[in-house]
Length: 193
Image (cartoon, rainbow, N blue to C red; front, side, top):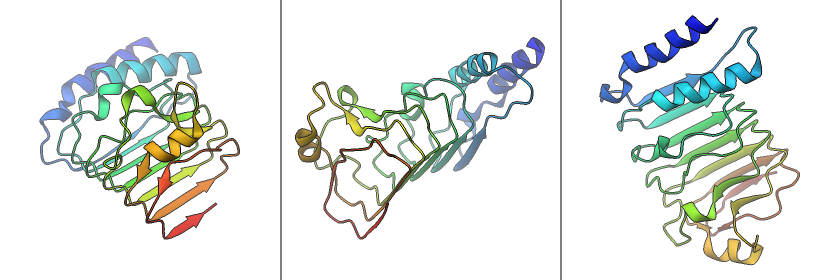
């Protein structure tokens, strides 16, 4: 009922995750039993609004989020992240900005059925420092994914030229039938499609 959802928000506020400076790994699993999708979506978005993550995090896992988007600010201060997994967030259409994370080595995006683009062009700057440490990337079961960066005019040549993964070594793409354009990869060692 409504009091359970209010308790979840109150508990989120009380945990004071931001103060847990020794915390380096965090899994956030959103699971619902018998609740309507609309109610669950609003609850997830409300919980994320009050969730403040500690800047010490190195590993972050999200599963089952029913909100339409992650908050843009969510990863902004988490500059120590080396690994992110986002899994089964079926209603999610917009992802946080990943490319500014200087230490991010592993990124796995799985079962995101509504995501069309990983990043928006207005949030990123194409340069040799784009994803400066990323070595492993997995994109799995993203049926609407069209392209990595959403550009205004959808210029595929610009996307390959301006956005480069300088250290990407391992790339896995599975069940992404609409994906047509991807940034350049100078050091790729293994490709699983």
